[in-house]
Each structure stands twice: as structure tokens, then as C-alpha cells.
Amino acid sequence: MYQEEDGLQEKVVFINRTAKVVKGGKRFSFSALVVVGDGAGSVGFGKGKAREVPEAIRKAIEKAKQSMVQIPVVNGTVPYEVTGTWGAGEVMIKPAREGRGVIAGGAVRAVMEAAGIRNVVSKSLGGGSVSNVLRATMAGLQSLRHPDDIKRVRSAASD
Image (tube, rainbow, N blue to C red; front, side, top):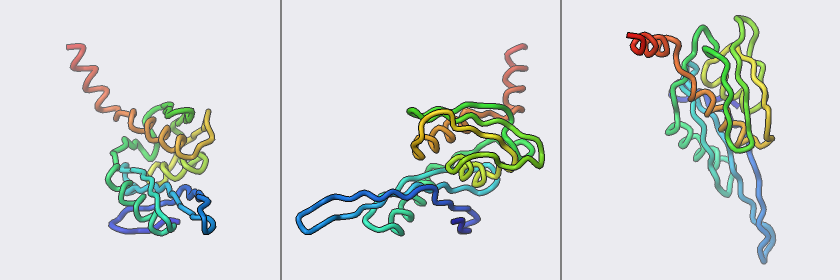
């Protein structure tokens, strides 16, 4: 479910329903995981909780916009292979040649498309929790540095 607002793409990754049994019956609560990106290297995610689904999604979008970070994108892919971990979640992200497309599962695919990464190969290596896989993907992407920055640091260190 992509929506264009302020030039940002919003993708609902996961909605969870929990029930609390009370005297009069059951009380339902919802949590939503949302990914927001501009398609040009900026991406963020958020989790919102509320009694109703639309309100949970709205809260998640607000948090996702606040948590946006810049990811280095080189020719529509990531600059080099990286592995991100969060809890039991572990995600391997590899660059791919032009035309390969986004080869990734649910949460990872949402992050890559929102960030504007068009060619990438990804594999979830551990943990099935959507939240942990999403956070592991973001941790891996945040650890990336642009090749020009790495060259600059290496040339300064050799002088």
C-alpha cells in the first residue's frame, strides 16, 4: 500500500492484532510497522500502536518520518556487501548488476524500494520476526559508507 505524500512513499509492512480478555469480552489493540522513503536514498521506519488500525498506521508514519536516515546508493544498488543484525534477525545485503531487480523478502523489499535501491540481492539468515528483520536491514544499511568517503579517509591516513 504505497501512498504519495510530501514526495514520500509509505509502505505498511506488518499489522499485528492483540486481544485482552476483560469482563465484557475482548479488547483488541493493533500495532503497525511502516517504512517511509523518498526513493533517493532516505528511508526510515516506525511502529505505532492504537485501538484502531488507521490510527496505528498514522502513528507509525509519524515515527518513520522522524527516524529517516540517508543511505548511500551507487548506480541504483548498495556500494558493497553488508550484513546487518538486530536481536536474532540477521540480513545479508549484496549489490546486484543493473536489471537484476530487488530480490528480497517482505520487510527487506519494502525498505529497499522506499530507499530507491533498484538492484539488490538479500537473504534473511536468522530470526523470523518481521520487526527484527526490518531493524537488521536498517542496521546493515546504516553501516554502509559511500566509496568516495572511504577513499578520502584512506588517502588522508596514508599521508
